[in-house]
Length: 89
Image (cartoon, rainbow, N blue to C red; front, top):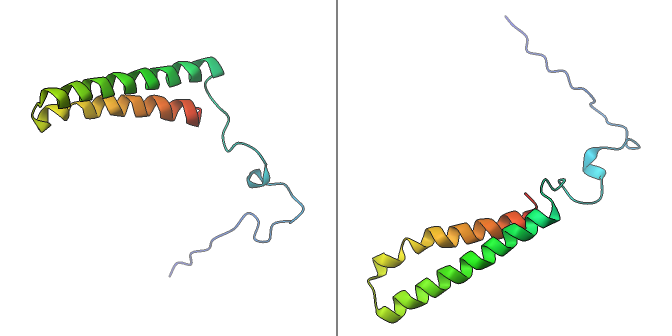
């Protein structure tokens, strides 16, 4: 017969101690510079504008709906640029 025993490091933590969860501020340290964030934001904006222009032309020409499906990847790239700029990743 085996006995499984679990040992906890600190069952009753000291309430006066400082834990990382108690820190105030950003949850993570940005790993890109403000200049690089600006570049990624500019890319996202330019990509979104290009995609919307292409979509407007496709709608104006009355192309089949399936021809619009590849625009998903262009919207995705624009969204990634925005995400990286605003989330500081």
